[in-house]
Structure formats: structure tokens, C-alpha cells
Image (cartoon, rainbow, N blue to C red; front, side, top):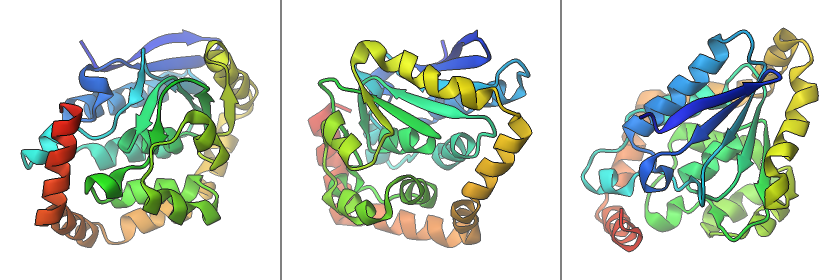
Length: 247
């Protein structure tokens, strides 16, 4: 069974649900399923927008730290994040539960994010865990957050309540849990009803500078990321986080 599926298409809106094991942790299998679900939604003419959500208590807890401690960082992370960030149809993230590290980046990659006002945490904890931001993740964060909040959120590496995350500009709406999916659909419906080629061009122009930086020096970025991850200090923090979280 896939960890991510397009589970429904209603009135042109495809619901892509993440329901993988281990808190929707991002290993290569999970990321391949995520990318495949978005590619299927792009091919399907009847789909005019995507609602991305999780299940139960998790949106996504981010990278699989167990794989990182074993020296096997997910090879598909950059591709999957780029697929979501550059998706040519509107995407709303309906954040139902914990959205941590890479899971928070995935939320920010959407065009519009709605947070349920629930008992869960949201945050970009990479610096605390010892995981450097891949360039695509860094550029997504820089694009999505108010510029004055980027250093505070990145350097702070904190886990926040949904209301605090909303206050820092990490989402466009904060709603009661029972209103989450309806709120995401309410934003998607009018946007998806407009001419999609015009939307796709506007989105591409909006994100062009971020993607130009992603593509400017990929080899150097990979080398620098690998060197930072491979430091003894970073490896120790990753091992500690994996043990603490049981993954």
C-alpha cells in the first residue's frame, strides 16, 4: 500500500492524503509516493487543484532520522519538494497534525496553508537536530515566510503551537479542527475555477527566483550539505534525536 495516495476527486479538487508509517516520516519510499501522487494529479485533466493533508495526529514529522543515522539520507527529498513547490495547479495544505522539520517545509511548499487549532506542534527544528537545510528546503522557507521572520524561525528551531505558527506567518488560516478541510476547499474552489494556464504562469514567475537559486550550484550545495551533516557534532545530535523520538 502506498504511503501517499490521491484518495478522492470532487468538483475538480483532488485530495492527496499522507498515511504512511512512523508519523509520515520521509524516507525514499514515502517521498516516491508523494511525488507520484502529485504527478498523477498533474496528468489528470479533471483535477484543477490539490488538497494535501495527513491522517490522525500527523501531517508529517519530517525526514526519517533512522535513515540519516545509518548514513542513508533520502535521495528523493529534493525532487519531491520541487514537485510540490512547482506544481502548476493550486495546492492547499490542510495541516491536521504535527508538521515538523521536512513536514513543515512541505506545508510551506503549498500555495496556501490552513492549520487546525489542535494539540500538536509545528516547526523547523533542523538546526536543533543537526540537519542542514537542503537548498530547496531553504528556498521554500525563504519564499513562504515573511522576510523579517525567517532568521527568527530558522535560528530558533522551535516547536510551536498552531496558533503561534500562524502568528509567525507560517500559514494563511487557523481554524477549528472540524473546519479544516472545508476551509482548504473554500480557498481552492475559486482559484481552481480560473484559467489554469494563467495560474501556472503566475505561480512560475512568483517562484522563479527561488528556483533559480536552487538550480544555480547543485553540486556545490550537495557537497556543503553533506559536509555539514557529516560533522561529528551533527551526527551526535541526529543520533540523540532519533533515539528520543524512537526513529
